[in-house]
Length: 161
Image (cartoon, rainbow, N blue to C red; front, top):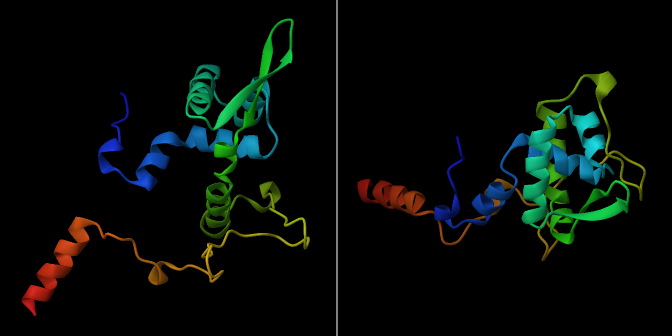
C-alpha cells in the first residue's frame, strides 16, 4: 500500500521524513556515508532485496541525495555518491547513531565507534546553536509560530484559570 503523503503538513521535518521515509533508505544513506558505493556492495552489507534496493536508490537519486557515476563501460555499471544535499544529512545520521548507542546499542562485539579524527576520541552528536555555539536542549528552543493545537491548548488552560 502506498504511503500517505505528508506534504499537507507544510513542515521541514515532514518534508525530510517524506524523503527518508523508511529504514532501508536511512541504512542506504548510512552505508553511503561509510563508503559503500556499488549496488552489489549495498546488497551484501545490508542483506536487502535487489528490487527494494533498486527502488530506494532510484528515489534517492530522483530526490537529489545521491548521484550516479559510471565506473565500468562493459557492461555499464554505476556507483552511487552522496550529493551536497545528501551530505547535509550527516548531522541527522550522527544523531540517530548517538541515540542508538545510548538507547538501543548493538552487542559489544558488533559495536562500531565513531571517532573524531581531530582529537581521536569517540564522538557523539550534540546540537548547538549556529549563532552563539551554546548547546541546544528541548527546553531552550521554541518554534515560531507554535502549532495551532499547542496554542489552543495553552489558551484553554489560561481561560480556565
